[in-house]
Image (cartoon, rainbow, N blue to C red):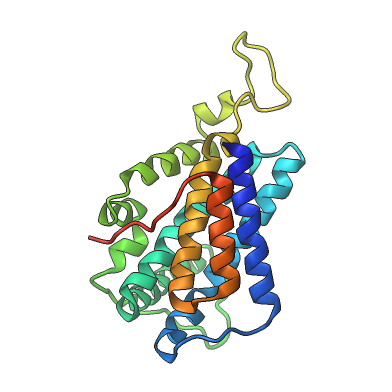
Length: 232
């Protein structure tokens, strides 16, 4: 499955590059605000995938686990913004403001000088902010607990955990210069599905022929038809 998944990811990364290299897209006016807001996430997803593919080719598939997890997280929140629209964007802005407020407090606690003109953000609450702040809550909203499981498994190899350390120990207790497991090989299909779903979400805004063809080819490489999850 990993070869088919890698091929699917590569096809969609190529389609993104073609669209981005054109410098502009044509889309209905009602989708402009949403697309402009999430384009950077789409770029991050595809460029992270490009990094993952390069890492895999260099024998570093396991070490790109942070990128894999980031793709999974970005993919679902991007789809949520497409599905919900303006209210979701307001929730993202609210959470960003909360992050800046906490950073400002940490800056002061560390004794750093504040930049001239910098003020402490208010951290305005938003009723949908939990979907941005808590990935588990977002997965539940999409009936996608099966997506949260690999997210958590990948987390054990990103943070300093016992399980993460064991990835470089052989079963006989010997040292391993190469990981004895590979998170890309384990979860490549999950990531490919996420990237296809993101492309479907983006294409619901664009209706782009290049992307439409790439989605079809990617699904063929993966060997399964993929639909987007449905928000409750």
